[in-house]
Amino acid sequence: MRASKALLTFDVVTLMPEMFLAISDYGVTGRAFKENIVNLNLWNPREFSMDLHKTVDDRTYGGGPGMLMTADPLVKSIEAAKKRQDKLGLKNSKVIHMTPRGKLLSHNEIKRLLSCEGLVIITSRYEGIDERVNNWVDEEVSIGDYVLSGGELPAMTMMDCLIRQLPGVLNDDESATQDSFVNGLLDHSHFTRPEIFKKMKVPEVLLSGDHEKIRLWRLKESLKLTWIKRPDLLAKKLLTKEEARLLEEIQIEQEQGSI
Ligand code: ADE
Image (cartoon, rainbow, N blue to C red):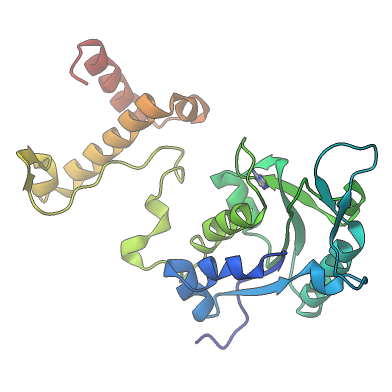
C-alpha cells in the first residue's frame, strides 16, 4: 500500500454507483485502486434530492419524449465532490461531463488530462442534464459518435485509459509505451507459442534473436497495419526517414500484389 497521496483522484457523480465495481475491483485498474495509485469516490444525486421520493428527473420544457436529470441534485453532488477535491489540494482539478456532444476522446486527449490530479466526472442518464448544469462543467467528453444508455461506461472507458498511463500501474511486460496510438501508429502483430499452429508459422525473424531486425520488422508491421486499416492516422503523422522508407516498400509490395 502506498503511503503518499494518489496520483489521480476520481469523484464520479452517478445514479448507478455499483457499476464502478467493474473498474475498481478487476484487473489492472483494480490493482491500481488497491495500491492507492488512484482513488475513487462516488456521489449519487439521489442522496441530494430534497423530495420524499428522491426524484432526480423530470419532463422537458417545450414537450417531447424522455426525461432530463434535474439541476439541483446534480449541482449539489458536483459541489460536494469539488469541495472534497479542493480540500485535498488537488492541482488542476476539472469537472467533466460524459456526453455524445463532447470532444472526442483520443490518446492525445488522455495525455492532456493526465496533467490533472483530480477529476469530477458527471455521468448522466435519461435524455441528459438540464442545460444550466453546464455552468459547473469545465469540459464535455465523448467516447465516440454513438449513443450509450448512460455515461457510466464512457466514464469508465476514460478512467481506464488514464489509469494505465500512470507510473507504477503497468509492469514492464504490460508497458503502455508500446500500445497502439502512442506513436501515432497501430500496434504491430504479436505471436506466442506454439511456433506452428494449424500449419501457420510464426514469422522467422521473430525467432532469430536479432533485435535490430525484429525492431525493423515490428515497425514495418505497424506501418503496414496502419496503412491498411487506418490510413487517416498516417495522414496526420510526421514520418521519420526510416518510416517513410518502410512505407514506400509497403506501397511497392502492395502494387506488386504481395500484401
Ligand atoms: N453518454 C451517452 N453516450 C455517450 C458517448 N458516446 N460518449 C460519452 N458519454 C455518453
